[in-house]
Image 1 (cartoon, one colour):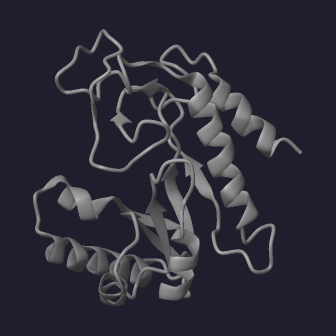
Image 2 (tube, rainbow, N blue to C red; image 1 turned 90 degrees about the horizontal axis):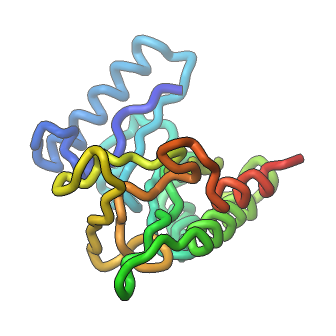
Length: 203
C-alpha cells in the first residue's frame, strides 16, 4: 500500500499550502500513484474525521487513516465513518502520553496503560479482521519511544513537559505532552503501556 501524507489537513504538507490546495495535491499524488502502480491501494492519513466534501474531492484514495485523540475512547468515530464512506478506514494514530499535566504535573504510567488497553480493545472489538461487520481495519499506537526533541521551548538533553491543550485530546488530561508518548522510554525501557499492548496481541 502507498500512503500519501500524515495530518496534511493540519500541516499543509509543511509548506504552508492552504487547505484546498492540500486536498488537490493529495488527489494528484494519489492518482499518479495509481497510474504508476495499479497493483497496490493508495491511502492517506487525516487528522480526525474528513468532511463528505473532502472525501468526494479525493476519489483516488482507496483507504483512509484517521488520527484520533478523543480521550479514553473513540466516541462515534467508527459509526460516523461508516455513515460517511464505504471505503476502508484505519486508525493512523491513537494512544496517550505518559505525562499528566493536571495539578502540578507528574508521570502517570497507569493512565497511559489504561488508555492503551481501552483504545486498542475498542479497535479490536470493531476490527474487520475479527468481525464480519467490523468498521475499522486496525490501528497504529502512537508511539514506540519518547522524542525528547519535540518541545521547541525545551532542551534536547532533557525530558521536557511542555504540551498543548487544544480543548480535547488524550487521556487523562486532554493535553498533548509531546515528549512523553512512547510505550518505551528514550532508553527503550518498556512502560506499562507496552505490557498492556503486548497482552492484547499475544496469541
